[in-house]
Image (tube, rainbow, N blue to C red; front, side, top):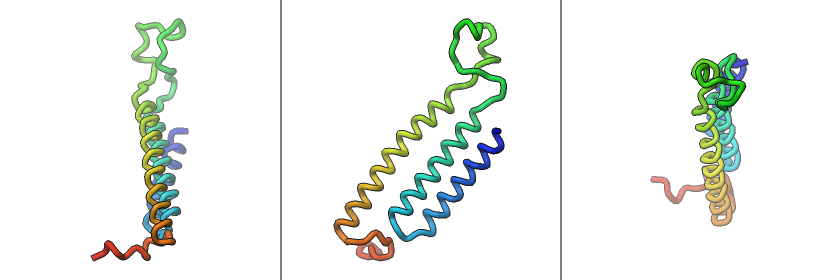
Length: 118
């Protein structure tokens, strides 16, 4: 299970980076970055998963004396939740820039924006 999750996560990261580097359309680049971000989140969750462990909730099911051996570290899940929120904000910012570029220049093709090139 963990090997499959890691493979899918890394495949999504590679597919997203490939799409971001090979496309000329800004919207396709944004989607590619979002796919790569999703792959990174899957990899982080897969790295934080451990077989035979339970949620980090101390109750009658997990005594305090056995908590260190039976619960899973919640830090990777917290980092992924934070990364999802940050990724959403970055995607919204990229879409706002794309909208502004389209309304100004009338195109989303990266090669058409030459006014800032050397």
